[in-house]
Image 1 (cartoon, rainbow, N blue to C red):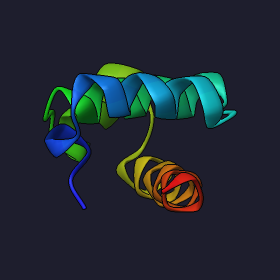
Image 2: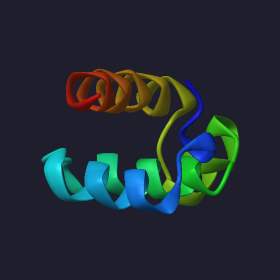
Image 3: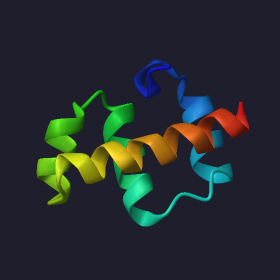
Length: 66
């Protein structure tokens, strides 16, 4: 599942219903724009391991909605 492959309508639904934290929402939005995880880590000033952990949480929340 690639977040960037969702339609705008699906992305909006996920954003509205997911109950993301601020960091999760920021990561979700970056991944929707197809930004690699390593670049997300750099832009968010977080370690790559933290980004991978956040990414896992985001994926779990998205899968629950779908």
